[in-house]
Length: 400
Image (cartoon, rainbow, N blue to C red; front, side, top):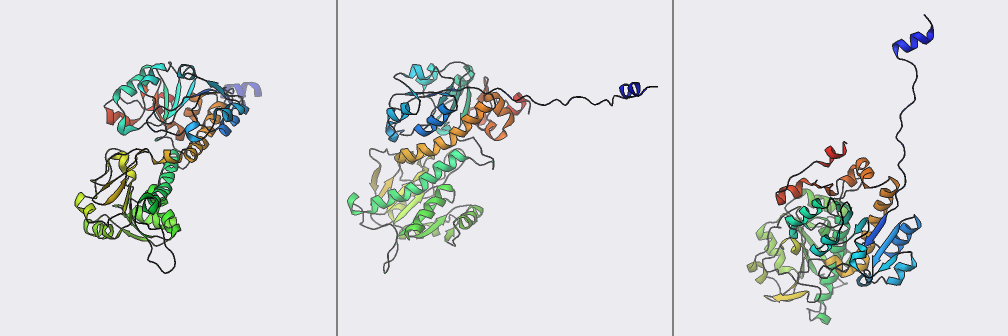
């Protein structure tokens, strides 16, 4: 028997290896509308990011005035290659829509079938009809709150929390000062004087960065949280043995009576944060002390908290100044916009390199985690439970 027959009969002849064909580059058509939500000053892409995308062969269309609130002029965008348009209708003809806040009802009506969307979801203020409309139009939507990085962290949530933590201390310093009819105290400490007392409720990212800012200024800090693990992690992250405590009413009240500044930064994944400071506790606080309730977008940690705006950010109750603006990051809109843009731009470049959205979410499990509607299906288990909508596992759809 010949060698050729032996090889063919036993099937051991070498064969060509089947390799995946690299997908063709996809040119993206990106639309950036002007934010219409109340006091939303951020923009999803900066002029520098637009320039990078245009240099890589993509088309960017931006609505007139979209970057003004973040101190980016229309000329800066057009100089980098963006096309300036004067109506939302033109923007929503784009294949890819980039927003900060989720689309409004009017904007959803302007969207076309099969478009892609990257924006926040704002679960606490969202309604079922929003997701039904996205599914009806078969829009592939990515949520800032769900997109993960290579360490399975939430980069968009973290960077906004970092900004909120740092900014909250700057705000507290403003309202302690004489200029804003405060107590005339400097936030921090100087030689020969007792430092300002800062109480931070919540040992998450907001609490950590508020703590860093406080310690940097020389303030005396104590952090409260129900999780020992979070408190231990905070101490390790800032490399300092600061005072910490679980949220015990007696210990909390003692700290509040001495506090000049209180940062309420409890955060939970979904629902309302617990109200840990009663009105009676507020009455026991020092006159002129300042409360920054960063958790106000989830109901607030103080019983006395009421939602305020950037135009009128504070009110005084029982002699205590309350700052309860939900969107603190929008107060420093340029910094926040640059941070968001730095996260979105690499995602867009990768989507283009991989040949489109379907290709990238099939390959990248971390980016796939950010998709909450795909091809007419709700693919987020959390949203499905919250809004009583049918859930379809995206891994099954993509065959991963």
